[in-house]
Image (tube, rainbow, N blue to C red; front, side):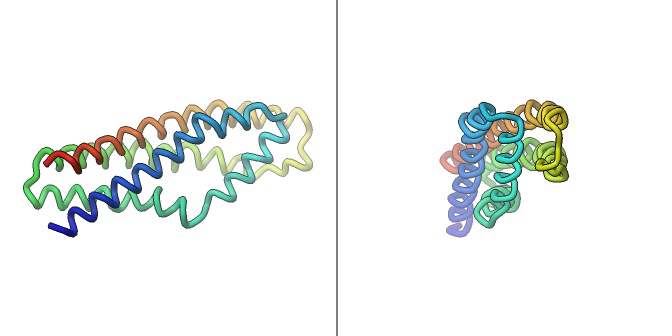
Length: 162
């Protein structure tokens, strides 16, 4: 049972880190970037998108995707029914609301931004790109922020209540 307890600690940490990352984007990063000119905004976002793809990000983002189902399975096998259902719900919310939204929503927008040479784009092209990118990306980030926070809260409750 010690392994299960360690998994619970890890899943709470990982989901908390993911929730905190998306929350920080929602309440500060996107707002700050939003005050920039079109070219500055798009260049800054391109830079952030390149930098965020690192081991620290992938540890929390993908780690939650791996550890949540594992801790769910262990709680089921340990016959801890309430924790099982909370972990299962946390897993589904994370897989759909965080991972799914990121892969099928934010990443395609990031790829669209990355494929544009901002140094040669006209002011109208920059304006048009920002119009297609910013509001959609922020809306998707809000969805995954809420999903990540809910998943984190459920993991905390499931870990406390047995």
